[in-house]
Image (cartoon, rainbow, N blue to C red; front, side, top):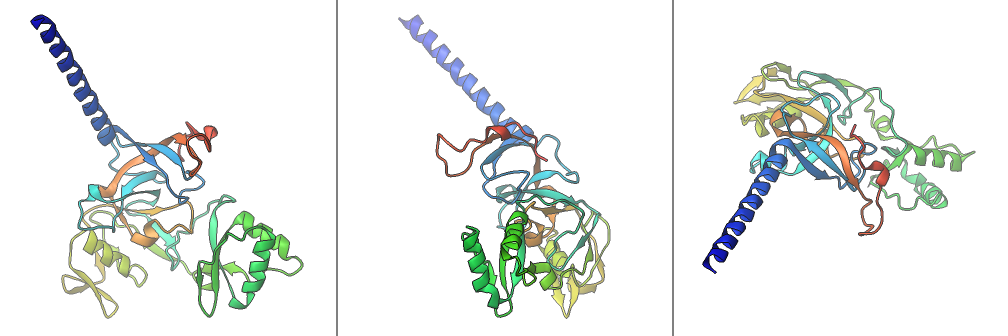
Length: 304
């Protein structure tokens, strides 16, 4: 009887040891090799859709490459928290350390790229056209399209290229020349060069990057920086250029209406990158429960 109890104890200890070993391997894999990430929003359409679950490679990912869809810790939210405890975001690396980007006053990056038919863009129109717009939306069964902003000069909505095509067809022969892209209405077509900071390199201070540089110096370089009378002051001394102790990236979403990218929180430090999205391992439309909404054709697709 005693031998039987000892044998049972040894088997139990063996199973516990195996369990601990398996847990340790999983923890190491998730922290150093690969992890999984759920996509909750439409910011990366059409590369990633809400409900996609992706594999993120962490092995050796200490510097991003141009075009990577990268996972990173939010550079501005909860700055009092350690970097690894901040919320995770995902976006495409369009600006690498030392790059010069062409941006408008809204910090949209201008480059030659083909937008998907589902990609949203902001449009503005005079308030006097609201009744006509509402009638068009109802006729096209687009009544779920919501007003995003309004003042005495303009109303703002977002439309995909396909939705804009439908509006143009429905408005004939009355043209939609009163509906214009928001950047044209605001005169944001004037482009400026924006240098992405590289470790040790001088970055010239300009009227369009002064706030970005001040925020980066304060949040990530932990230096005392202020803007006084239109000039950047570091440590109380006005400067015309400044240097940085680490590399930075400019991150964009695929959907220009989604502002969860560098247009909102500025440059992303290299230390905040955690991995590169590689492949979709599961996909289900949100809100369909256990038995529906599966997108089998997306499972196994590479992320690009």
